[in-house]
Length: 473
Image 1: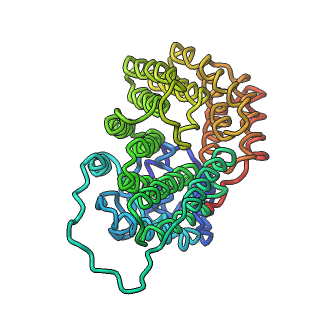
Image 2 (image 1 turned 45 degrees about the vertical axis):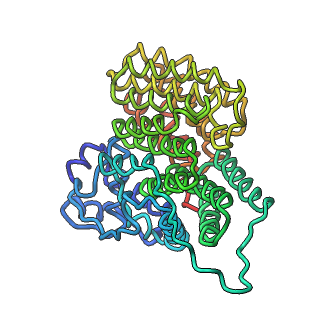
């Protein structure tokens, strides 16, 4: 662990503060670390759970790549197959059982820090190969007749208005997430998911079961997205995987491709662009004949992000063009779009494509050429999100993205202005993803332009105005 610590540039006190912050976020309020404890870890002491998992996540985020517990020289807790791993059976009853078990565990145990510590991130073939089974046709239904129902038995019925209400509630949760961040209503989403799994354990007509599986898939995806947003990466990945299983049971390939795109985004965040590319290609292959232009444009944009982080500019630029061209077909005929893809607006398209160019600039050694390509596209994204008013988290993330572009262009004063604006927006949302990017951007500015008055002021603003990491709820 010592070599990772030295490379991180953190002090012992800063690492202790980050561990305590992440522990509070996970609900592990019994964790209280100080510099002397960190010193003992560096000297070889084995910390107890959930600290090894927290250290793995913190170093992974710091270096932009998965840093496993074992790479830190630490031991992880034993993981039970029902909770850990992503290679799960692709069958309806097992999917319902696993969704029910995992959501119940999350509701009951996460606030004490146990759930997150029993999980590990999967990556590489251990992640990609199980996800490829999403496209394997489901086995034929068992033709064996069921035993006759007892006399007087009446199967449970869900009325059309009740199903409509379940779907409308999911839409409402999605709107809350966009406006307020993942930390505000995560527990409510998990609770609703658990209620839906209870319904799925009853006997319903096939069309009702499909709708219930679709609701379960959307709620599990949203629970995964919210978990990702507040930094609970292993929990997020587990929900994404379970969501994909539910989408398969619902027979909804476009929804499955959307879930895979969320998994791809997480892999980019964790420094695994090759995994991200595999996931987005799987999503494109699975939905090429049934997804609408907005969904296809979103997948091309995610493909561009992966290529950018792999340092492949020609393929990145091609994917950006495909995203733009495909988005031009949005609104021309076809079926009504599902609510889960409506977030991918012109603002989001510009935001994704500008971040691809920005990422290319970093991978290419702070290339001014790619930074100049990013600037006008990012400006357009910021302008559109400012008018939007609903997607506050995306607005903050693109303000921060614009700030990083100005840092690439050696314009720290302009970057400071944008970070100042992003700090104001960050106070309105509960998103550790936003907070982490703000901290990293200010750290970069202070390291490179520590003598610029506006940058000095930013470090003070960060301490006084950036909220502490919110507890996961």
